[in-house]
Image (cartoon, rainbow, N blue to C red; front, side, top):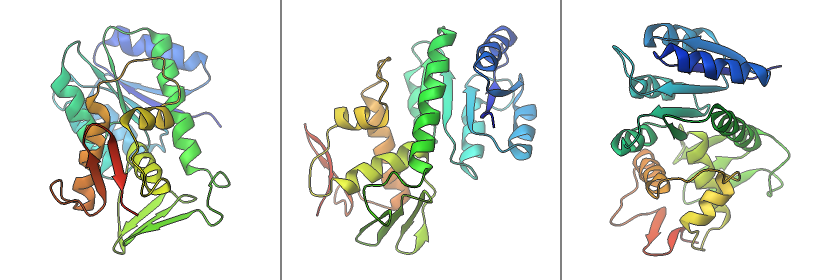
Length: 233
């Protein structure tokens, strides 16, 4: 069954071009030029990934991203204007997994889509866990690798694929410092594009917010200045 991809961009030429390239890769594409039509699709279809332009008339792509994250954890790629660093960070904070700056090469976007889908499926798939039962536990935190579920003090945590991946890596290497570079390599294996140094920082901050973890006195994710991040054993 073909993966279902949502593309939303009010610049019809861009939306049409992206849809053409994704269609050529045998993806099932749902293409829209307005946020209203996109939201209807999100409610109607079981999507596998969304590509959202930030600058849309009416409701922005950032608002759509926030709506998606209220119910879904599939990957989201934001399309941003050149130099809009604030929009990139805001998108990541709201739960986006990646961004690409306009103008871009369609083949690069296709590669990003494939990389995100591979990672999403890999961390949702059973049978690839290092642990026999697929369960990671630490101080009230429980991660079920097989079902992609996460609980903290018996309360469910709704994590994006990227957030889940980061937390899983830190739990697997509990007691050891994991650098931002290692997290990049483990999560985005296809390093064909440069990423902002803020990317991991933003995802870590978002994780802490969801976990109710303190930056000054963290119970779970500790920043080791100049080195990376760790979860104490």
